[in-house]
Image 1 (tube, each protein chain N blue to C red):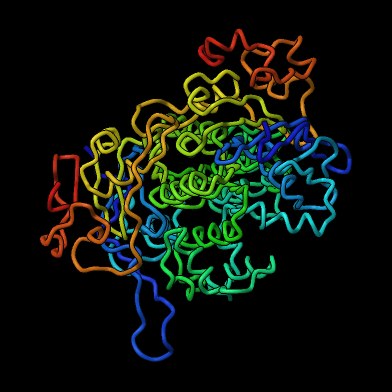
Image 2: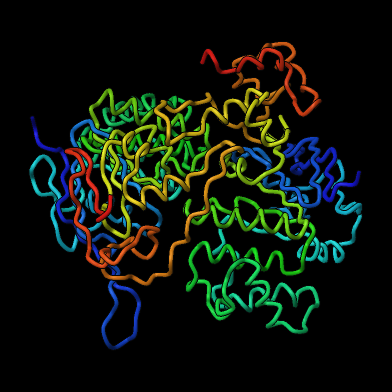
Length: 308
Length: 319
C-alpha cells in the first residue's frame, strides 16, 4: 500500500477584510484547518456553496495561493508554489486562455517551457493532445479562443493541463458554465482520462449531480471546514451531517411530482462560536456551542457533528 | 380566449438574414408560469428581448410575426408607449443581480427609481417598504447598498423593483442560475407565490430542467431558434416526445442515482450555420435523409418532429 499522492494537512488561509484605517482589521478565515488526501487515480469531490472556501483550497493545492499554516505534500514531499505534476482546470474558459494567442500555442507552451521540447516536437505533442480531447487539430489548432465554443475551450483547458503530464488534476467547477449536453461530454472526457492515465482528480463543484456522476469520494465543505467526508454513493444516499442533508434536499430534481422543501435561508455573516453550521442548523442544541471535531463514523466516513 | 401574452409566428433575424428565432408561437395566461427551456444559442433570451423590444446589439430585429400583450400588438406602439409598457406592464429579472444594481444606490433608492420612472412619486417610502415586504425583506433593507446584501437578497431587491408597478407579465431570465441551491429554492418559491397572488403571468427562461419541473405550469423546449416541443409540465417530464427533449432529460445528473453521464453528440449550431430541414437532424439518432434533412417539420400537436412515431419508444435507447 502506497501513501496518498497528494496530501493536505491542517491548511489555513485567511483574507483581510477591508476595515477602518486604524484599529484592528477583521480577518475572514476562508479555510480553517482542512486535511485531505487524494490517492493515485482517485476522483474526489470537494462540495460546498459559494463562500465555503472550496476555490481557495483548490488554489492552495495547485500552489497558486500560499497557505497561512499547514502543509501540502506531493508523493511525500512538501510542495511550495506551482508544480508541474499538479495542474488546474478552470471554470471560466474565456478568462483562462490568453485571448491573443492561438489555442494551439497555449497548449504548446508547457511542452516548450516545462518539458524543454524542441518546437517541432512540442507542436506534434500538442496536436496529439488536441486529438485526444476531441478537437481535430487541423480545424482547431490555429484558432483564437473567441472562435471556440465554451465546451471546446474547456477541452483546450484540459489539453493544456495534460501537456505538463500531471499526476493530479484540480478542476474548479469545470462544467458549471457549460450547457447540459456539453457538460456530459466533458465529464466523460475526465472519466476516460482518469481511467487511461491514472490521473487523480479533485473536482471542486457545487453540483451534487456532477459529484455522483464522476467521483468516488466526496468532502463537504462549510465555512472553510470539512463537515462530512465519505464514499460518494453513501454520502449522497444517506447524508449524515445536517448541512449535507440540507444541500441534498435543496437539489432540484426534474420531476414535477416531487417538490423540494424550501430550506432555511443562510443567515447573515454573523459567526457564532462553536459548530460553524449552528446558526442554520435545524437540529442545533446547546451542545453545539462547543465546536465538534471531525471523527470517524465508519473507517471511510468522517463527520463533524455532535448528533450524527 | 385571450392570453395575457400572445406571440405568433415570431421571427428575429440579423441584418444579413440569419435567423435567431424562427416562427415561434407561445402564449402565457394570467397566473400561469411558462418555462422556455433550451441551451445557449437556442434563442430563448432573444425571444425575451423581442417581447421587451430591446435588443442587445444593433442589426437584430423582428422580421415577422406579432407579439400581443393584453390584446395590444407591441410592435405597433410608438417608442414612448413601448417604454411605458416595460416596467409598468412587463417586469424583468435577469441572471446576474449584481450587474443590474447601481453600486452607489441603496436598495430603497433602486426600488424608488422604478416608481419614479413611471411617474409615481407620492408616498414613496411606504411603497418601497411594501415592495420589500412582498419579497420577504425587512424595511431596513432599504438603507443597504448592493455590496451589503447577499446574492439572494440582491435578486429579491430586483424582483421587488420588477413587481413594483404591479405588472401583468414578469420575464425572468435565468433568475436563479448564479445562486446557491439553498438560496435558489426561496427565490423560486417567491416567483410562484407572486404568480398565484397577483395573477401574474411569468415567462421563465432557463436551461435548468429541475427549476422548470418545480416552478412551471407549461414548458416550451427551444432548439436552434425554434420551439420543438410544448406541453403541460407533468406530461412533458413524464413522456418527452421530441428526441432533443428526451436527450436533455437524460443528460440531467441525478445525485441519487449511479449512472454514467449521458451525452448527446455535437452541439447547438451557430446562427450562420443552421442545418437544412429539421435543425436537430445532424445530432438526432432517428434522423433520415428524407424528410428530416430536407424539410422543416411542421409544429403540430405540441411537437415538431418527422419521426414522432419512432421517437415514442425513446430516441436514445440504443445510444
